Amino acid sequence: MKRVILPFVDVRAMLKVKDVMVTEVVTVDVDVTVKKAVERMNAQEIGCLVVHEKGHFAGILTERDVLKRVVAKALNPEKVLVGQVMSKPLTVVDPEASLEEAVNLMLEKRIKKLPVMRAEKLVGLITMTDIASAHPEMVKFIRELASKYDIPKRIKKVMDYYVA
Image (cartoon, rainbow, N blue to C red):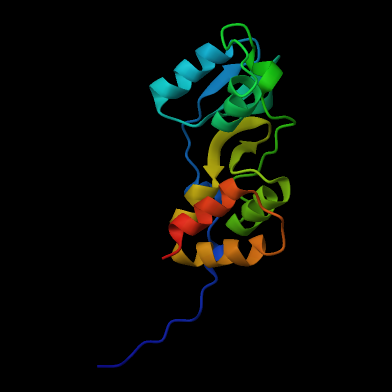
């Protein structure tokens, strides 16, 4: 039997955002109360909502936003609007971008969730967890890149979870 040696393939360059992203993204308007937004997140079992304002996407509301900007400050989620506590400006990535580009952007901006947009249309969402679980090589790559940044504990936890 003849042994076949395959050439090295750099998974980081080969995989693109569109290969890993989720395509069903839930959105919310800026003028919805945080209580209603959290109810939507709970019903969909998701950790964020991309925020829509006057014909464009203006930000993202994450669980962390709710904890830091509403719960920790003992604000009333029935009175606080999403637009008041969302993370902004919205950082996005193109579906044709490499996973390497997405990781660099997430680490640079210190975020774990990245909406995917093509020509101002929301087409998906990719998270650090999606990338880390996409391929074992990606965890090594994320660790290499992370050593160049002062990363938050929440991102380090994702890396630690996926490393054996």
